[in-house]
Length: 424
Image (tube, rainbow, N blue to C red; front, side, top):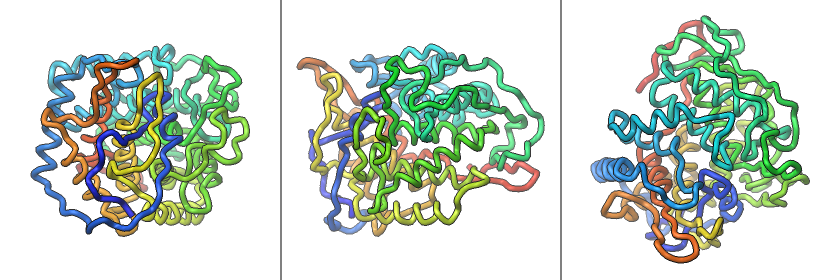
C-alpha cells in the first residue's frame, strides 16, 4: 500500500527528461507496506491554489538556466504552462515558437526521445489542427527511432524527417477514431529505417540503451499523434505491445529493462518498480485502444496483474527508502519523485482507475504535493554550491502541476464514420 507519512526532504529520486530520466529509474525499487492512515480527503480549493502558484512559478522562471542541460525541457514546460492556463503569455508564446521550430534532424540535446514525445503532447494540447504537421513530424521520428524489440533508446533516426507528411482527406480504414472534430485531415507516417537493436542516429554505435522509461514516452508521443489524426503503423504498436507483455514479471510489475535483452548496455535492471510498472500500464492502455490486432485477453490479464502490483507496491509520498542516483554530479532524487507521480497519473487516467488496490492515488499524491510545495509555488530543490550547482525545480514543478491537473487525456475513441467532439 502507499505510504502516506510526510515525505522526508533529501530522500528523492527520478529519471529526468534526458539520460538521467532513465538512469535514475533503474534504481527506483520500493517495497510494500500497510496504510499509515486512511486515504486523505481531496481539498480542491487548496489544489487549485497550488496549481495557480506552480504555473506562476514556471512562467516567472521559464528562461532560467538550471544547470546541466538535462534539467530543462522546453516541451515539458510548455505542456505544464498550457495546462496551467498561461499559453497566452508573451513568454509562453516565445516558448511555443521554440518548440514548434525544434530541429528534429539535429535536436541539439543528447537524449531527444523525451523532448520529441513531449513536443507532440504539448502541441496536441495547444491546437491539434494548427500543429498537425509538427505533431506528425514528431510521430514520424518516433516511428523510425523504435528499436527492433519494440522499445526506444535515447536517439533518433538517421533518415531526415520529412517537412510535410502525406495528407489524406478522409478517414482511412486502418484508423480507429479521433475524439476532436476540429482536425479534418489525416497524416500518414511510415517506417523507412531498417530494424536494429539501437536507433541509427545514436552517437554510440553498438551501445544499447533502450528501456521502459524511454518506451513509455515514445508511446505517449504516439498517443498525442493518434489523437491528432496521425496514422501510426500497426507494426510500431504491435512491437511495443509484444515487449511489454513479454517482459512483465511474475509479481505483475515491470522493471527498467527486460530480462531477455542480453545486448542491453544497462545490464539486467528488470526488477519491478512502481514507476516503471505505471509507465507500461499507461502504454498498454493506449495500445489496447488503438491497435486493431491486439491480444485483448492477454492485455486485460496483464493490466489486472499490473494494477494489483501497484496496489501493493506504490509509494507516492517521498518517504521512500531508496538510493539517490547521481548523473553528471547531480543527485536525481527529487526529480525522480515528481516524475513518479506523473507516471501514476498517466496510468490512472488512461486506464480509468481511480484506485490502485485500496489506494486513491490522486488523493494521496495531492496531499503530498500540498505539503511539499514551497512558498514560491515550486517543487524540487536548488543547490548553489558543490561540484555541480543545479536546480531541479523547473522539471519537478512541471511534473507536480501535471499531476494535480490530471493532465493526461483519457482514452476517447469513436468507431463510426463520424468524428465526434471530445468531452472537455
